[in-house]
Length: 279
Image 1: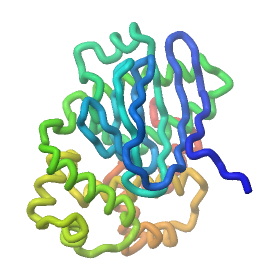
Image 2 (image 1 turned 30 degrees about the vertical axis):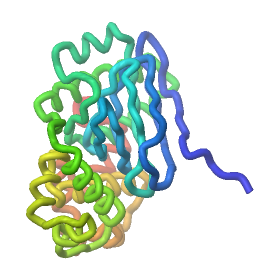
Image 3 (image 1 turned 120 degrees about the vertical axis):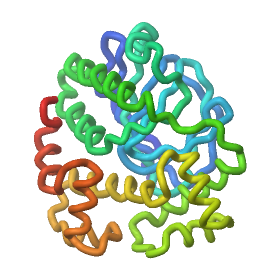
């Protein structure tokens, strides 16, 4: 019996100092793995799922809507705090282009709160549609790096949290990732019990470490799942809403509009065209 490899990648472009790769990881829940590094600096844009990454001795939980900067030759370790794997777009740049793109902005090794889930998914679709034209993919990638760095530069996650606080936040993030589609009415209390701390402590620590509330984190994961389903052609919105833990179709539509500025039908339209308005 054959098994699919846990990590699959597809090169979308490798031209003029820009290397764009679509990465899909189906690894189960796993602790941080062996230390590794890459020859070029990179921007990692999560599209689906969550993963953990330890850089400069600081572990992070990275979810859709965020962005991870990794400097060249910077050691890191990846893991999965919850099952389900993840999908990402990875943009590696030459040192010269990286210097132009990042400049005096955010340094590597940081998780940035980009808050652009739909934009990242549409960007990924646009790259895939242009895979036969590497120069077009290269241009889109360079524009996207600039957009993300500019948008996220002022919203870095706090790297000063204590190791114990980070452990609490990682444990809670893993719990939410496993159960984000379930209609848990008292999420904070339930997650605090699962994590072994008080609701007050968890609320304060999680926001400080992840840069978002526990409910906000759950909402990002639900939105990411909704976007993936819409991209794959889901058309029964009532069933989709129920599968993601929303109380009704209208509740789902309102939440999606609040998160990404578009209704489900508008999301489908954007994904069908493979670009955002004006892109």
